[in-house]
Each structure stands twice: as C-alpha cells, then as structure tokens.
Picture 1 (tube, rainbow, N blue to C red):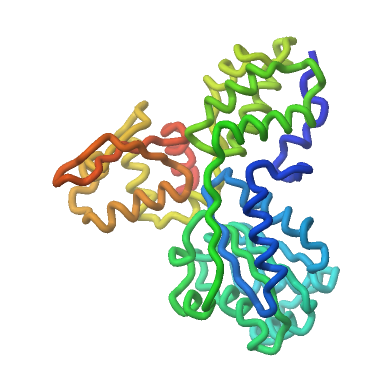
Picture 2: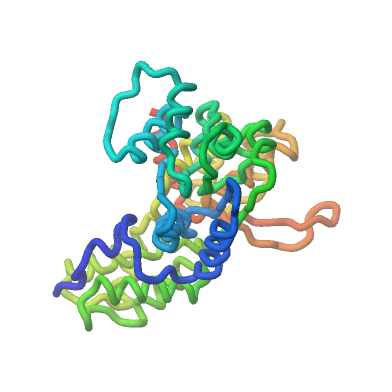
Length: 353
C-alpha cells in the first residue's frame, strides 16, 4: 500500500502555506522591518527544530517589496565568501573576484545592493569559526556609504557567544526574538498539515499522528516530528499497511532524531572532549546531573560547568527537569539527552576524524 503521495513535503526545503505556531513571531518581525527607517539588525534565536530557517523563507514571502538575500553561514563562513555570494546574488550572475582586495570587494557590494534589501544570515553562530567582521560592516552599511539594510541573524546561540565585543557594540540598538519550542498541540497540527499534503487519503490514522506528537513532545522540534512521520510512512509502505499507531512505535524504536552538523561543529575542542567523555560514561543512560560532569573533570569550576550545560541546551542536545532543592537551598536539575547518547557520541567521533 502506498502512503506517501508527495515526498517533497517532508524535505527541509519545503515551505508550507501556513507557518503553524509562528504567526505571532512573523507579524512582529515583519512590523519591525517595515517600520524601520534606518538600518536594522534582528537576532532570531531558537533551538534546532524551532523553525528558524523556515521563518527566514517566510520573511521573503511576506516582504516582497524587499530584495531578499540568503546566506547559510555554516556553508559560507568567511567574510570574503559571504560578500562574494551577496555580490553574485545582487548581480544575478556568478563572477570571480579572486584578485580584488577584500576592502574593495565590500565597497563594491555597498554600491550594488538595492535600497530596500533584506539580508538573512542563517546558522550565524557558525561565524565564530572565523574572525568575522561582516556582521559589523553590514549593520553599519548606511554609515559606510551604502543603503539602509535590514539584517537578520538566525542562530542557535546568543550573539555574545559568536560575535566579538566590538561587533556587539557596533550593532547598537537591535531586536532579539527567541523562538520557543513547539508544544505537543502545535506539533500535532504541524504533522497533520504535512500528512494532508503528503499522504494519500485514508493511508494513515489520527491516532498515529497523536502518538508522534506525544513521542517528540520533550524535544519540541518540528523537524524531529516530521522526520518520524516520514520514517513511519516508509515502514507502513514496506509492510503494505496503513500508517497506524503500531507502525509509529516500530519506527520510533530505531529512530534517531536529525542532528544539525553545525550544532557540533561550533563546539570548542575542549567542550567536545568533555561531551564525549560524559556520553561515554553514561553508556545506555540518557540522564545526568552536574555531578556526572564533575567526575569526568574534577577541576571544572562552576562558571565553566554551567556555560557547558548552557551550550548543550542552546544546541538542542539536552533538556532539564527540576528535581527539587539541592545543596545550599538551590534548585537541583536532572538533564536528559534529546538525542540517543550512542548516536551523538558516534557523530562526535566522526567529526573528530
């Protein structure tokens, strides 16, 4: 029995007609951009699967009066590479700027950008791999002789974690928007919408969709929910059955949530080693406390410890539960990996190679 009628519905490139659970964010951001009479910079932060990239694509759709430019900073993270890509998009053709000095290249970009430009830098946290100045320069476009630009940074981290202090200071007044993780009800609505668009009628049950939203509720990730939906449909097709709750549970047993390469690639080597040691010590367990980290690195101070945990949370690797009062009256937390520890450890080892 065929379940999937339109496989493109389950790809990361697909843009649905409705952006479920993010309408308020979109309206707020659109208003900020439309009302801005000078250059503006927006920082949109959210864990993996909270809809950052899709939000960027929706901005292009909702703001057709602006000329849109998109750069994935995980793929292109150097100043020269980003400026070259923007230049090529502005010109509508690919050119070789190899012999032109970087300063001249940026001045050329300012001359070629239109007056109403919307530049989206996706996976902007990847910029910390290079000593970038591109955010500083683009945010000060009008001061440097260029047009007023609307610059949007999509990131899993706070800007202080990947931009230097001079760039942060140069941004001046800017707007921050934090995307919350999706609720179970929103996840159900999202996968119901994808199922209607991508499955044959009568090939799946509502109970199956409810089970998926329940299973991925802790992650709050639409990407994880959609991937589990697709995997369940493939198993149903293999078995020649409809996609029901039993099939979803089969798919979930061997399911590994999608993992963004940029989430790991941007960890410092020391943090990756600490994370690998933690995962290795846990074995099949998926929960830990701060004491587990201290056993691996006894000399770690409190500031360094909580910075490490914060990085894991911002990358979408872990969640936390409050257990009660800890030593000294503080709150004791238990942390849990949203991705199977064995899968995450395997990816770290592959990255190290």
